[in-house]
Length: 329
Image 1 (cartoon, rainbow, N blue to C red):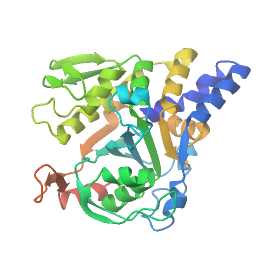
Image 2 (cartoon, rainbow, N blue to C red; image 1 turned 90 degrees about the horizontal axis):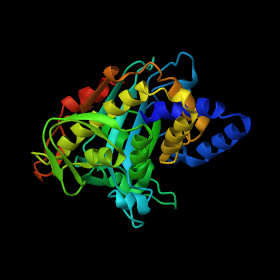
Image 3 (cartoon, rainbow, N blue to C red; image 1 turned 45 degrees about the vertical axis):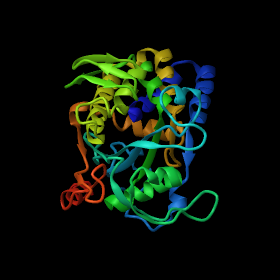
Image 4 (cartoon, rainbow, N blue to C red; image 1 turned 90 degrees about the vertical axis):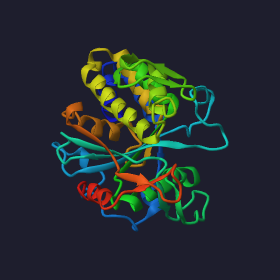
């Protein structure tokens, strides 16, 4: 949904007129922060899914793509803190999804990785030089905490055996702004939610949520019956489809001001790999997803079982997890 919204940005900018379009393009393009993951990780990685990193530029597109999408509070500040984010002392990544786009971009599989999964975290290079030590039986989300996007990607590739062709990270405040810019999202919940930590209270049923409420739903864990990370993932997957439905149903090209608001919300909250860190590249990818609708997006969670060492943690369930990752090759 983030990709499709960003893909409309350039077209919307052109509707604003030449001078305004130039300013809008510069603003949106400069919003995006890039991380050179390919250079940091080198060649010791799984084979790429596509012949080249710009396969989405083809018309029609060729080759499947795997994109690691993280939700984080890494961009500290007042807005993120108000929404439950971190502070300047660190960053967390509690939402992780591997998005597999098929070769024709008409269907996708979104695989959620529970943050509480115990994994082998490989040694990761650090921007300042040196590297983090390898660690065993540690929570999955520690990879981002100790080594940022580069270590998150390397850990996912180690876990899945799949090359992450691209990386996209969106922060708390940006997600809330995106939902508000789209006019909210409609989601149906199966049970009452009362979560003091996410500040969300909802009766079971269908609700039209604003940005703060949608973020609360994505973060809700203790306000559900089981209070588990797996319950939270189910809510996050509902949000993915709700956002995709909203983007598809909103004719942003007829409202340049609204389109710019959406594009500014998306790009202002993004960190990507250097293959996607320009408005031009995001536009190409977003436009390649024109035929992707919510009913053609499959959402699943990596199969897990409780860890023997800690009942509050999980480990990949084998061979089911390996079969899932192999199906995305």
